[in-house]
Image 1 (tube, rainbow, N blue to C red):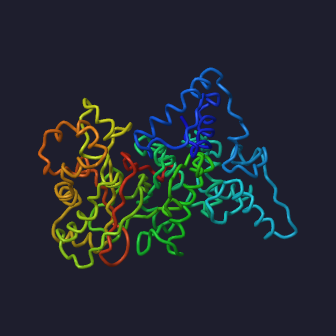
Image 2 (cartoon, rainbow, N blue to C red):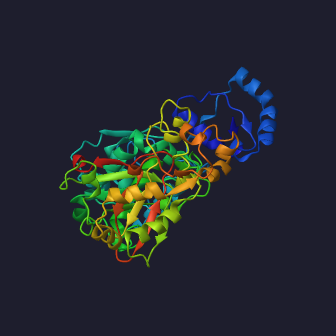
Image 3 (spheres, rainbow, N blue to C red):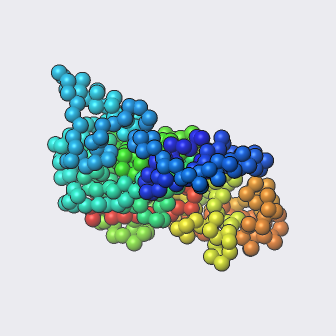
Length: 462
């Protein structure tokens, strides 16, 4: 059953999974946006088409699923489908600037760009980018959903060139690709959802200063100080598009979108943090370099300029993050952590991990906590105890209201309506990073679905 707004995605997915003769029936609207009555009517109206499709198995037309955009179509040897060494597209003009403009215009027409100008991935530029790693250009780093694209080191380098990256950034980009294909990351959700999900990357270790990843003022913003952050994040987005097939309307079904999807990369401010770096907490050595990826749905500012104690800072945090939307814990505690319960699948997802939101603390706030003797685990424990929603409020949400809470976890089903339900499954779910410059302007990044933060080595890709 394919709603009309998702037809092109259906064609692309059918090709990716090798089932282009899969019977399909179109319905006017997506069921999730319809009332029960509308769903029943659409289903009833589709019965004859369902019978016909099952009987005839009409094969999809391949020309409908070749390119991200309907027109114009790329030439047969487009590098999005073939290694650049096998086919080269030439753009000729009397002046370099004209050829450059034509390259950019055509690549955007073909859907192979992110909307910003691209750097032409010439053979020379790609070879230059490949000097950033000792790995073979033909090595397959991963198969990337939703199109199951084979991400070789060379194809990753091609997209890194187009994003304006430098060779010394390439090991971080390769590590980021390795991280997003880890099952804990839930790439299918991040790449394909109708929500504004995006990979949030943070970098730790010596590589931060070696290549200049911004961890201070404006580290998630524009400007020369964040040029490395922007290029790394942009490269990953192009990789998800041109190798993974997550094009808007084909693969990426985002309803509204988010500017965070262009690039969302920081480094941890290890120099001003009073605690051990993030990657050390994850079992790496301080002298090792890592990149961590987590699927988030955006960023919310926590305004706490008048807060001077841990409790004051966290009071503001708690009362900001306790919304009832999916990004604030709908995949969390009201459901189950017990694999024996049916609701476990809904709460933990296919990877059996929980919702892991990120707290971004500027150095001044982190130092306030440390001066009062607070550790990261103290912060997590406080949030777990105080960031909650009453069962009565949860019960008003359609997810639980329709069946009167029967799909809630057993431990909450018989609890009183004023019972306090934490918005995450366990205290350790809260990921804590020290980033940014002066002032107590904190941030909260809610997570897409039930994915977990995944940390990978950068040094392995040097």
